[in-house]
Length: 182
Ligand SMILES: [Zn+2]
Image (cartoon, rainbow, N blue to C red; front, side, top):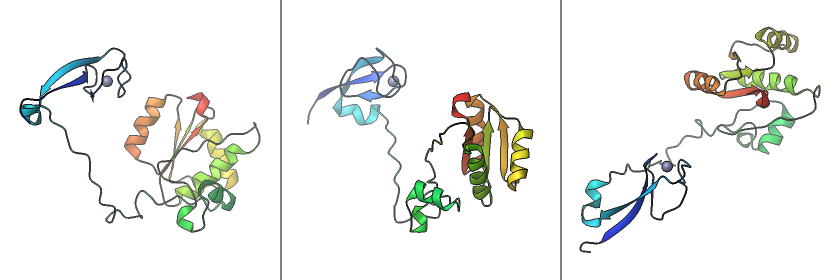
């Protein structure tokens, strides 16, 4: 292994490295950003600093943490979402995205209010609506007996602002009503 010269392509936009040239960076999607660079293998270890991937010890990973599903106690819904029993395989999987669709008036808002109520008993929930005001949501929650204590309402259609609120509050569940308004 003497002076082996290796060619790599480095994106001028995001610094992603690729062994092969392509017209489009696979990392950032930039067009024509890959630039050829030659790397002397003898010094490569010193010149290219690559952070090691995060190592996760599966034995130490507690299933109490991120893998614990959020049970809604709406049996049909938990079953559809998770397919349990067992109970730890039913309900909303953290990190997942669920799209609830249906005709107007079919009961989507009532169902999400019930989901928010169930999850908010032990967790923080963000309810973002671009369609209804806080007052309208409150009236529905009161009618359904939803305790709003752990439910934070955002009257917002700007996705960036909603994301910023999510980063700050770190809720267990975010409800977006409706996705087409944002
Ligand atoms: Zn790139």
